[in-house]
Image (cartoon, rainbow, N blue to C red):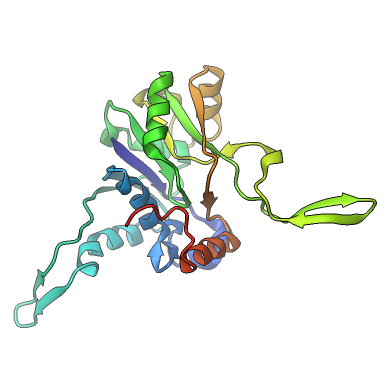
Length: 256
């Protein structure tokens, strides 16, 4: 099953980082968050990736081209410029890097990947979020209901501290999962190729008309992921992920 990753947005809320690189190349633990996401899928044996590029897509292309060399010992013959890779990387990935336009919206980027996905079930996620999802359970759920689309629904940690107030006295302050606010779209989709018919073109935002119409048609199901999920929209969220990685408490690190 192919894995599509949208990696073309401007990442404006991470401008301190994304002025010089696309958001999927912002590093956690010295590796781009895109690398972390791909390792989640690879852990379950899904190694066929299609990455939708846009803003500063050349950075992602260069990283993927250089990946094997940077991950291996090399011998360089300075006389003739020959480079010999002394060991092969253990990474068993096939990566298609597709330019989907600088200003193309999320739905448009997905539509542009249709020729590379073909007439088969595929997975889709964004290039800026990680979780410890059981992908086999997600796929089994998708197959069980027979609908066109499965969205992973999550309850992320509250963005700000929760305050319990009584008579102007703070009775409790804590950062807890936002169970009171309900579920949100955590991406990590499983989709049938018929979803391409719900996307008009480059100006279509996936999270608006296509998902709304799929919902009205009763073709959108929610896989409720109860455990860890975290996106990286802001520097604060980058620091949260970095701290988890550096302290050895990164729940999304399910690979060896």
